[in-house]
Image (cartoon, rainbow, N blue to C red; front, side):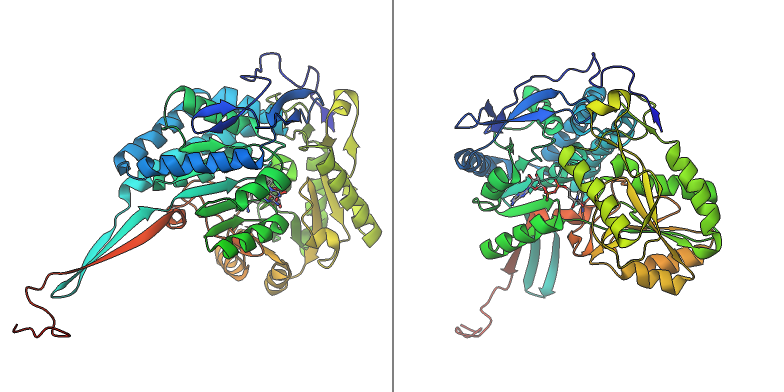
Length: 509
Ligand code: NAD
């Protein structure tokens, strides 16, 4: 394993706009009402980056009230205006792409090659996609019969709460904000307390450039058990949540009690399936994209790696070699392939799963340890890891580890691997590597998940709907169909007849 951490993990040129962030409520930046803060630490260098406010219930209620006030006018803006606002936000992100990518890498620990190549440009593209989509949205008008005009109108929904996790803080913000703003809703947005900086910087750019009216976008920061809980129980009209299945279940229940819609993007334990006729180079990239991308902290991670028995030895020989050669190090070094895990708690959880795997009879084929040599000791770094001698009933094959730890499970044929892939409470992603198109489609259709990649993995283009089956969630994002969950349908029935129908007043009257 090579270390690239030869200079301070916080690049000298990297500057946050402030060391003390504030809440954005009704267009104004302010501290938490009781002044409480949370310290944000660099996962790669262990040093303090900044403080963020721990929002109180009063702060959350104030943000919701500001969003409610702003809704009265924002909901009446024209589609053209909203589309232009989204395009302006996309331009702003693009103008500040290097800065935002650096902030994201500093805050989250993900490599700069990922933030510059994926998180930030995908965020730009999502705003542009929804700027276009909203222009194409149409209501409809039909004649029920000769006298009845049936108008179907789409109206903004109201005040939307949006809560996202720490693994893709900026991209998840773009996935959620773009459709909500396009639909004419106002937003109270809560990032994870571990990774709030990139969305706060985006909100700063939006407010400094007067892109949105005050109160349309509000950002409250803080822990899930405080600001998250306050927000899910506040006076909102919808909640959009991305995070763990455990927390998502509670949010779904709270939404049901309030009788408001919720969309839930939750966890996964996805099957990445390799048949012996696959291209081995594509397969090696696919296994890396599946379980090493974002340090394995991806909801759709290809964490269950199913390999056809007939080429298991060839596959494992090459995979262990590739995993050993992954460059783990300073997230801000462009050559780094894998950065830091998000924090000590997460790393401890990942390492505990390696131990659980061992105690269940698994073998660590490669990796399995924390990296501590040189400057890596200052951060939270982990070896790319593969466990073998695993079967699908073990905890390491059933529970979400959320780190660079793949479990390798052999299989013989298509039917067997489809059954194994489906033997999971989750149903988010999945991959199939094969040269046989018919087989790829059969397996893709057989696997009960919301997304299947063929001969690639973890690609997230705008326009491709993403979301889960089973306990992986409800709803689809990154596609125009999400607009339906941010809008209401209004039906207007208009009688065009010149005379009464005859129910109470005779037609001849
Ligand atoms: P988490 O569920 O702990 O937290 C997610 C967000 O919810 C955070 O902002 C957190 O502060 C907040 N939160 C926590 N408890 C809350 C509560 N009681 N009420 C309201 N809000 C609360 O998840 P995490 O550890 O930040 O992220 C990892 C999880 O997210 C994984 O399970 C991963 O699979 C999932 N995820 C899913 C998707 C997807 O699109 N399906 C994408 C990314 C991550």
